[in-house]
Amino acid sequence: MIPLRWRLTIWHLSLTALGLLGLILFSYRLLSNSLHAEINNTLAERARHVSDAVAIIPNRPIEGISQDATDEFRSPGIYVQIFDSEGALVARSFNLGVQQIHALTIDINRVLEGESFYTVAEISGSPVQLYYQPIQRDGRIVGAIQVGESLAVLESTLKRLRVIYSVGAASVLFFGLLGGWLLSRLGLRPVVRVMQTARDIVGAEDLSRRVPYVGPADEIGALATTFNEMLTRLQTLFESQRRFLAETAHELRTPLASMLGNVDLLATFGENPARRRETIAAIQRTGKHVARLLDDLLLLAQAEAGWHLSSLASIALDDVLMEAYEAAQLITEQVALKVEKCEPAFVRGDADRLRQVFMNLIDNALKHSPPDSVVTLALWREEGKVMVRIRDHGTGIPEDALKRIFDPFFRAPGSGRLPGAGLGLTIVLWIVREHGGDVIIESPSGCGTTVTLSFPAITG
Image 1 (cartoon, one colour):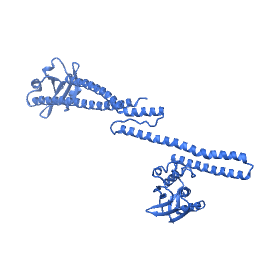
Image 2: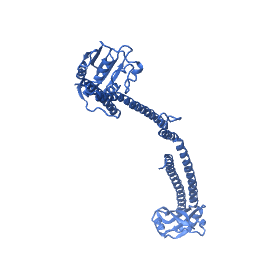
Image 3: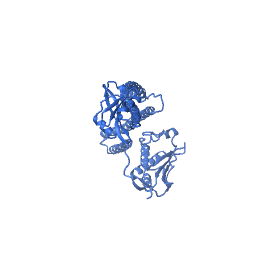
Image 4: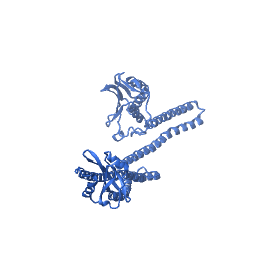
């Protein structure tokens, strides 16, 4: 597996090489075409001058004036040859010396037919750019001109240019490779620190460690910040899990110990009918408590796993509240339960779960209310919502405890002797939020506690 650092370097180098290659090819082709065009223009201009010189002497044979024309317009590096109307060579510039530029018969015939064109030939192994043009006199073609220029200088220039481009490209790619490697090394250094921190955490099982990032608020900084936030969340979740397991074990230890003790009593005093009935009843109560605790734990586990309520339907929330009220009337003795108002209202929800919410809150209010006090219930509609309020007149909840009231297994000071495991309000909050609602608990010191629920209202 190629490390990311080298992959980034290779990608950077590849893009640089492609861009550089494109630039070199474009500039080389542009310069080459420009130089060839300049030579072609020079050849065409020279051919025109020679042709004009021949054409302006109408009564003199082409054989007699062609040599004068070639000598008049000769220049270093440019060669001129003139052919008559039969394709025979009648004049050539002196700078050709003993060298010959062989003209193909097919090329001469094309010119004598009135065509002008460029081609390439060789003189002593060196390339020569040629231009052919017809000579006209009085509208008739009386001969052909061949003008040539050596391409040796051009080829030498282009060769030096290719060497310069090659050396320059190699230098650019070398420094690009070095720069890309250094930049990727510097850029990935925070990522390496994140990886090292992750390895240290795995090795030491220490979620309190964080990535020490110092730098700009760029993508790497965002990665380090996100990783630290993830560690914080994981640390919180693991601590919550450990605490949850410890408190679960604690909550189960007491009733199970009680059940085992009662089983021992039953084995010892089982022959006494009254004692046997009392012990069996105690075992049944403890068993129901354990079963209820396990049901609550299962529901919390499902909630944390992302499970959602699915069987939601249109229900009359006032009927659900009155059912909970009537059930609570059967268990309350020293505390009065009163309905202040209960307006008809419909919500989309699960009637059984909402009844569980109301029973839990009413049970809490009854347990924390002094004798001869009143717990009041109210339900009304308000601005597209259904509001439910349950109020007691107990001692209230301390402010510091109010902040943790929805934590699993949390029990407010002074409630240690009361039955319950501290899971009720956690489940209440989850069920209410599954219905799109919210829970607000107000508990001024010494003035009792008021729990207000809100749900989205629908039309029944």
